[in-house]
Structure formats: structure tokens, C-alpha cells
Amino acid sequence: MVPRILQLAKTKNTVEITKVLGLYPKNELEVSFDICACAALEVLTYLIPVRKKKGVIPSHFLYYPQEDSVSLDAVLKETVNRPPFIIQIEDSFHVIVDNQVLVTSYSVSEALLNVFSSYYVFCIEYSKQVLKSLLFLQSEVFGLKDDCSRNCPGLPLFVNTLNAVKL
Image: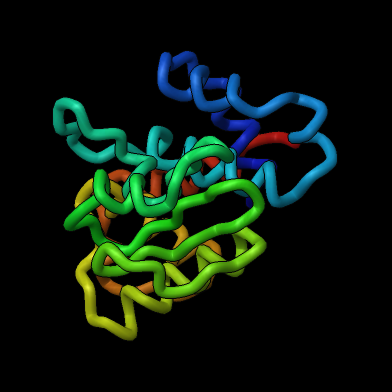
């Protein structure tokens, strides 16, 4: 799934996607699954957009990479009142729930599972900023299709488009 998301992203000529992909050195994308998965999480919110709010970066409501020198406390102060999401600092993936670190992982896959677990365990409604991305991951990656994912406008079209991507 990750290679298809990245391949589809490369065909889109949007400023946001070009900027995100430019942050990942091509040679690293060719050898590291975790780096590819991080890039895919970032671009996914631009491939399945929801109505944009001015000044809101949708990917930061799912996966929020930070510079290695940043303080986790400083990031938490700027991300108050967000639903569960992942902050990456260096090689650590912190799952943030209720503005606190719930768990720290060392793989983006594990962190993503923890984010989904926190939505379910704490009965938190999916964030509107990344609703379609979360429904896509829920239904297509985790195989948990429900009425919301089946009836989500634009999601079946995105899945068909993604499945048609040649690798």
C-alpha cells in the first residue's frame, strides 16, 4: 500500500505534495520502509483531502514530524486540543492523546496502530481534518470496513485510483 500511495503522490502536481516529498531524500525512500511509511502518512492527507481550513495543515492531525532539536514539551504546547496523532522526533514516534504522550514507539507502523487503538479505547471521534485518511487506513489497511468507510464521499474513488497505480 505504501509504495502505491507514494507513486500516486508523485503524479500529483500540488505544492503541498511536492513540498512534503521534497523533505525525503530519494535514496532513503528507496531503502527504508519506515521512511516511506512516514512520507505516505504525510501525503495521504493531501491525496484524500477534506475541506481545508485556512492555516491548518491536515497532515499534522495524523503525523507531525519535527526537527531533531525540538523539545517535545514545546510541540505539546502548540498542539493543544488535537485528537490523537503521532509526533516524530529523531527516531521516536510519540502518540499524543489529550495533549499527553500516551506511548512512544520506534516504528511508525506501531505508532499508527497505537493511534487507532487510542481512538477506539477512548471513544474519540475521528478528527475532521483527516477523517477520510483515517477511514481509508481503517478500511483498506486494517481491513475494518464499516458504514462510515463504505459511505464516505470520494473514498471509493480514491481506493480505485490507488489500486490502478502501476508499480
